[in-house]
Length: 162
Image (cartoon, rainbow, N blue to C red; front, side):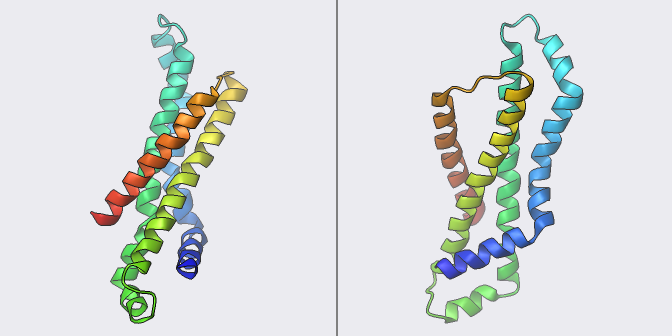
């Protein structure tokens, strides 16, 4: 199982353009917000108290939702490629068993689906902490980690089985 996980991680991270483009959708929304939309939305929502922090948190949640979808699709494309080339049939003949090959992709997907959004969250929070002095509460961060793990677990199961 560890050998299959190592194989899957090497195949995923060796394709640097695939990793970059899976994060590109989230980065595009973040950059568009910073360059074009932040001032307009802040001015439009000026009558609300703390509108800047509401908009920044709204952007972070939208960015992480986009990241979850794009990274899950990019990470599971190797499973489709292996089935297309019938690599899975070769591995079924070995002593790995019928469920180790798909479960290694699922485990890799869950790990990737968790760590890439957390990395992106740290980058976006670092930007907002530095630029707009946004405060992050420890309870909110813990809730974020649990919800991200649950969301990406369900997302990976959905894309894996359907």
